[in-house]
Image (tube, rainbow, N blue to C red):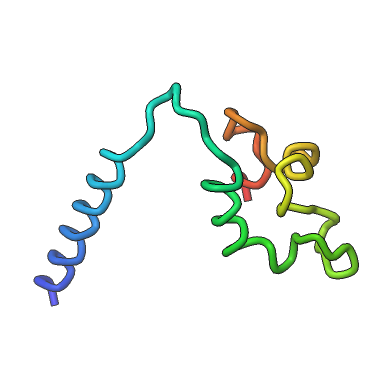
Length: 86
């Protein structure tokens, strides 16, 4: 049992190290449609999409401008982004 946890933890550390080595530089531009939208599509669009009749909390996340205007996402300020606080 301990060996299984050790192997899992070791794997997690390696994945973390690999992911951190691929972090983009500060001057690299982030593309909403290519990098952010797919994450929101997988996790948020079911309730926060174009269809106003089914949209929850009057929050639309399928368009960058709508997400930014609602303060759900504040570009370059994760502490002010309401979406990341939830």
